[in-house]
Length: 114
Image 1 (tube, helix red, strand yellow):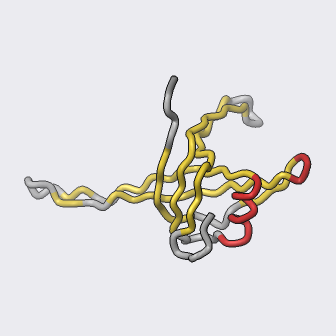
Image 2 (image 1 turned 60 degrees about the vertical axis):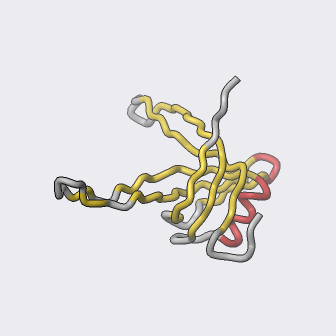
């Protein structure tokens, strides 16, 4: 038994990419940035802000909601599970990507949440 859960609050990096796949199922892909604020250490060393980019995947009704209401810069809350997938690029080099598959999505700068 294990737990696979990610929770992030951040800003959408670009307008979501929306596709409809087999049987007219909607899927949304986009990135979300989370930033940890920098600080000055006790010794006076300045530590800059640190931004992480997260790849997000949403399916079905959640993706349809995202298609209608979400745009670049929006503040969002996402709960989901981490998934890593691999593929070979055109040069035959194996690539991988880690994504958060959305279970719960809230648009924090709007009253329209699901």
